[in-house]
Amino acid sequence: MSNIVQKSIHFTDSDLMMNIFGNRDENLKAIEQALDVTFTIRDNDLKVAGTPVSVDKALNVIDNVMPIARSGDVITKQNILYFLSLAEDGTHVDKLNYPIDCVCVTAKGIQIKSKTFGQKKYVKAMKDNTITFGIGPAGTGKTFLAVAMAVNAFRAKEVDRIILTRPAVEAGEKLGFLPGDLQHKVDPYLRPLYDALYLMLGPELFNRHQESGAIEVAPLAYMRGRTLDTSFIILDEAQNTTPQQMKMFLTRIGFGSKAVVTGDITQIDLDGKKSGLKEVMHILKGIEGIEFIHLTEKDVVRHELIQKIIKAYEKYEDR
Image 1 (cartoon, helix red, strand yellow):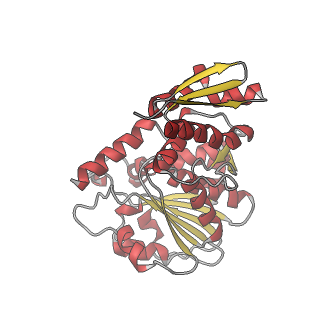
Image 2 (tube, rainbow, N blue to C red):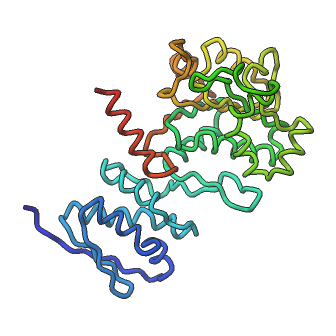
């Protein structure tokens, strides 16, 4: 059996210490449970006891959340679980390249930041490329960060319009069975895009820009035959495009425009048809100005159960 060792960290800032420990020390409890270590707090000293490997991992997790705490962000259990997953995999953490940069500020003054290294890479790709593909499971912030980048570009007058679109295909439900006119039929499919824009701009400003045509939220079929100049265009749920629809969308992009295509290739609802997103990953690979970013369950920033659900499905599918 491995020897039990004890190491300690001294905090000079009590507020920083309390932030890292979490409400009722929930962050420390998460580390204890994951690594089978024991924390003891005395004044501004934190002692950790366990096997040498576990103690080092625990100290690394605390050390790695320090820059986030110093930036003024509240350290959540989610932060702790993210760095625990990196520690478990032995992933090197680049402390000079932390995901704490502000992407956009919401209507209520809340800063939207990338929360994982994968998200930070995704944001950088959107800044640096004309077309960015964000591919990954639910909860990784693909759409939300894309909308934040679009609003930022719009506010900075880098683009004249924001255009958000989705294929109107969901879980086998047909548009014809839904009540109302076409707008009422497609609104449920576009709801996540509306929600993100409401948060970033506020409902009043969003409605004003939508009425003026500066913001357009529409099903993918509306893009056919158009050329979209000086626009920030987001194609969401792109796994449900056919190859023909994907080609149609990508050839709409005009001068001064950026496009972000998001999707989850594990959630295709095309009744056996080929996915345009899966195909385009092979067709456009290696072209300058186009970048594919693959997010994983580590980049999930929703409830911790979502990570477990994604992993469980991956194991099941592998079997």
